[in-house]
Image (tube, rainbow, N blue to C red; front, side):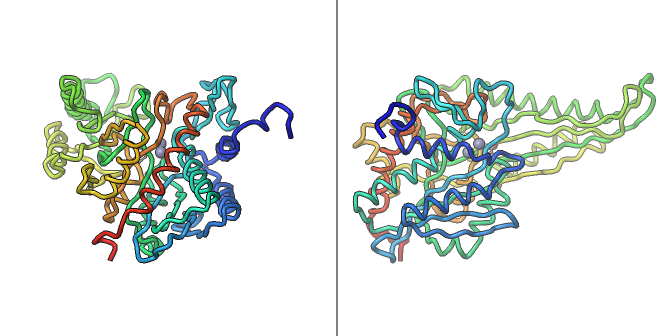
Length: 408
Ligand SMILES: [Zn+2]
Ligand SMILES: [Zn+2]
């Protein structure tokens, strides 16, 4: 075909847009369609394909390009398939249409987080394979469900399975975040998510009376203590230009629940908080601090954890780590400047690092505003394609890291 129009689009971009149209949106993702999409990719690329159902309806799809030396540990390229919900009325274009504007920006939920990365992995592998390359280490691509709601039915279970052990992963790449400057952000650790619900109980009664010891006044005290802590961490971040967001602890009040009527003082109320605890925090002391804020508010104030990650790990970013050496050397060769940071949010990397596999969080997206989870999430096709180039250089280097003591 020689006619003008979409036929002229780069095939990698077309594939990316096809994937963006699959509605893997929480809370009811169409995982079946995503699995079928990756099975078809495996067939087309001549890759091994394994489906591991880690919980009913939750399948991890593993695409494998075997290396020439099966004795060596493998490279794991991980990406999640689910995306967060949208507020459709705030979007310029349908978030599941993958509309491309005249400048080349592709609008879609998942354009940055992280459907771009899944396709960039696949397209880099395709290119290298077509060019006839083979590398010593096996490359596995894992496409996992459930990340956006905590990974409890996804990577958290998968890393405990014999099928994961059998991959013999020596090193992993997973998602990062776009960088608006010319530089690329790379994450070597993460803050730990602690989701905390504080429940306050007190004396109920008529809404016209000065009732003492109410649930609301005690909850208010805890909320004040926690928001004062938030302000302190915010100031600490603001006053030190060397500190990046991931190096301090953040917290947001994300839910308030309780009450039945204007004129009934409720016996119970609760507040929910999303803490992201910096990796250098003393977790035991921090939990005691939370408990003491509850106790200081009065009788009948308790807390429970909906999520409490206790195993922060750091992947070294110096040449003592041969994976870092290979990764950073490629970036140097390509003149890419890297900004190593602690991931402020949480990804499946935490489960991977916790089972002893070093991992870097990297989405090869520079000159791109950070729009993950936001309205009008979009990515320029040229940035997307540059990312494929970057993986096309990274994969040969990583899959050719010579035998390590940990390989035997
Ligand atoms: Zn993500
Ligand atoms: Zn996300």
